[in-house]
Image 1: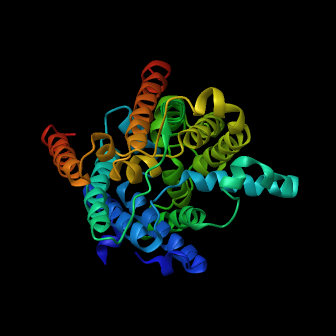
Image 2 (image 1 turned 120 degrees about the vertical axis):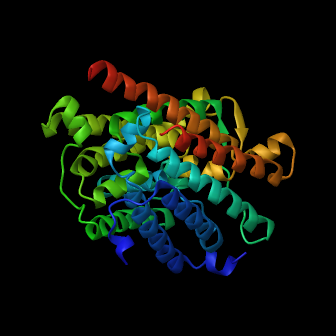
Length: 185
Length: 173
């Protein structure tokens, strides 16, 4: 692993900026910085968002696991619990449909001139993040810590080598994408 | 370089590009792509303007310092990258109301902005609650085969689809 590069703070800030520029460029070219495309996905009339996400997941999954097998990368799976992941995921989903952007695509929407994203959505996200940051200690015991399962991955859960999950997952997700095209979505 | 000026690329080309970008961030920065932590840091920076150093005593901001970090730069970069892409394709335009919203609820800007604020509050809180968003869980977490991320994505889609149908098929019908 490139540990020396990882600990160079200033260079990392530049790399973060460059990765963001590439990510923003791709999101805008994919059309997912548009409210209409996101809502089209949630109303199940336009599958652009799912096509972008799933092809990113398949590509990323194979590559990142290969890099890990080569000793060039390590995984950073997030911890989860029923109280965090299920409850938080549902709240996020509701907000996602009401706002019509997510934290990544809203940044792209601002870049293409969407003022509802800049004046409305961004203010909302900042307030919402701040509320959680402020009140999360109170939520810890009654909600967030309920049903904790830690930073578990599917291969760990199934007690198998990662590739035993990566290969079938890539096949299933790719087949799903072909099926979407086949049925005209 | 005509492809840089195109209005839209194939979603598969974009997805594969994002996947390759994730290889690079893992190798070069030891980090998965994620966007919602930066917003929590920004909110801490704003609080700090008013409350000063007391902000830093909050446990959450001890864990996620309100400072210029890799993920903050990533979000700044997204704005720049999307701006460049929109400028090259001639799509940069200041708009208040998205067309799907306008066709259903009218083109007045105040209702749309108000609803965007409400949605943003829920989404911002939900993203921090679940510890990730559509990029951190939806792409980076699922590609690492994290159990938390696959569950979170199911929640995002379930909550999102039900709410979108309520908004457009019930209120907007």
